[in-house]
Length: 88
Image (cartoon, rainbow, N blue to C red; front, side, top):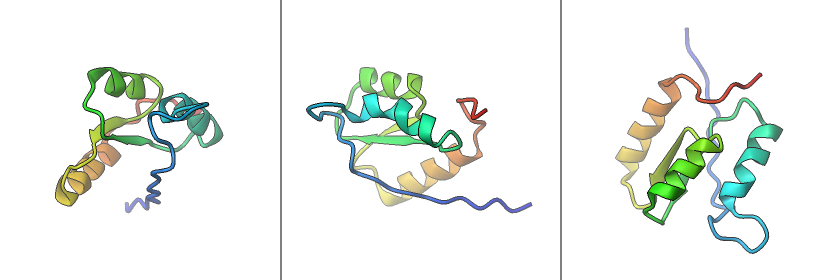
């Protein structure tokens, strides 16, 4: 069977915002759209950010600056992976 994915790229939730940062918003995004798979792209190289993003529901945390080929390869690999969050 063929699966169809909708890819939505947003750079609207920086990690450091005054009221709520992207990591704090992540559970709210997933609650509003439980079937979504979120990949966090960050300019900050930090294990803490990556582990926080994944613990809050992201399927991965990638560093900004990866090549387009690396990004596509990562997306394809992640889309084939089993979901880490129960969407029910």
